Image (tube, rainbow, N blue to C red; front, side, top):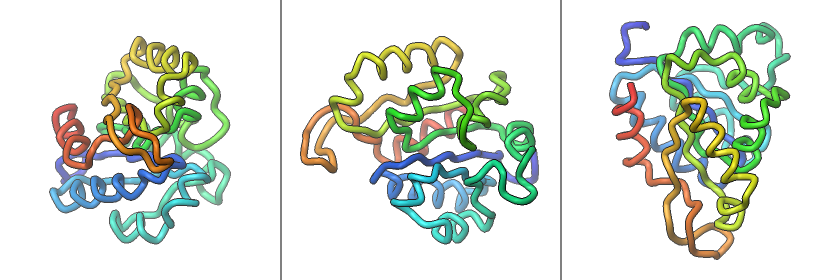
Length: 180
């Protein structure tokens, strides 16, 4: 660990809730944590690299095969004290549970040392959250030691109301601190 309060790998996937994740990242950095970010390609459709670079003062990892990145997914798992996927879409949750490693987030997961905390903060439509595949995948991941933060209940970007919302930033921040 560096001179920070802890090293956090914050992984964002394609959800409108990325704006809430930025709030959490900002707070972590302000509180003295070192934060590095990994984004799925779809996350970058909701938030730009420059926002995350501005919040963390570090480059954003997106493509496993960018110059000087071929083994970075391994180095990141050694560097971190805690990993979180926030927001975690149904796609990434189901992909991780299936053991698919075809992007940065999923290759980090496959290289992960589960003696460290790995958190997932779901964010999706209520029907996607209730889908049998997603429920099964959440159970598989929990069985492997992944900590599920649960989903909020309320108004969703699509206009529906129900379970699947990303938790509020304060709740996510508290869960990260509790698990370090």
